[in-house]
Image (cartoon, rainbow, N blue to C red; front, side, top):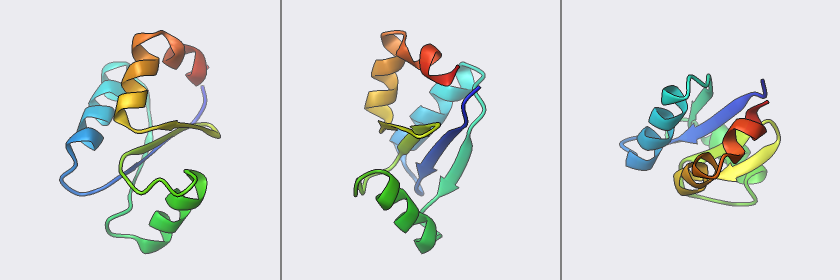
Amino acid sequence: MKEITIYTGMMCGYCDAAKHLLNKKNLKFNEINVSTDPEKREEMLKKSNNSRTVPQIFIGEYHVGGYMELREINNNGELDKLVR
């Protein structure tokens, strides 16, 4: 199983939706809240090619994007393949 990392922010509906989707699929993930940690925000920006919105989701080294992209790869069956 590949490691899943999700960079989140405070009071973020898309972050909550992404975490809910991952939890529903029983996928464990590391959550990093960038609103309280400037160093982690910089890390997210570097890894995501300067994407400033949250969530930013990574499966292993693969940058999924945000919640909409996560939902899309779940709906088309790619998420299950990516996490293996």
